[in-house]
Image 1 (cartoon, helix red, strand yellow):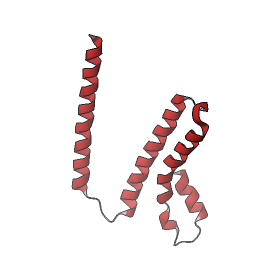
Image 2 (cartoon, rainbow, N blue to C red; image 1 turned 45 degrees about the horizontal axis):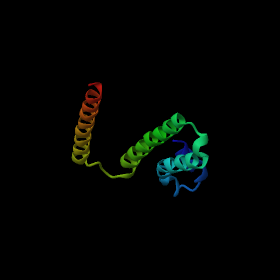
Image 3 (tube, rainbow, N blue to C red; image 1 turned 120 degrees about the vertical axis):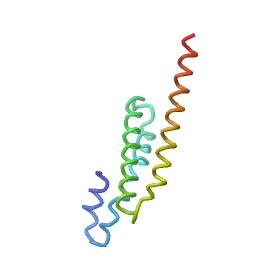
Image 4 (cartoon, rainbow, N blue to C red; image 1 turned 90 degrees about the horizontal axis):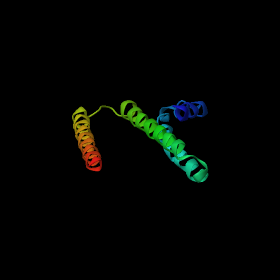
Length: 105
């Protein structure tokens, strides 16, 4: 949300303010670049946390772009994507359970 707020502060022309959602999707590249520059000086746990937050923020940006910049949503396609994602999560959980049970023996 911060990149969108900065954009709105800088874009004083009313014709430019409609692009406020676009900068929201750029922060993961910035975060990855900063982490790459800092290298090993950043603890691994902090790198994971920052990249996870950046990914979550980008998912929010995708939702903002989908909701505010498209004339309509294809709910059928969204439903299929959610269904496939849930099946993939179930398969990953089964694989993790199988791997855990094989290491227990």
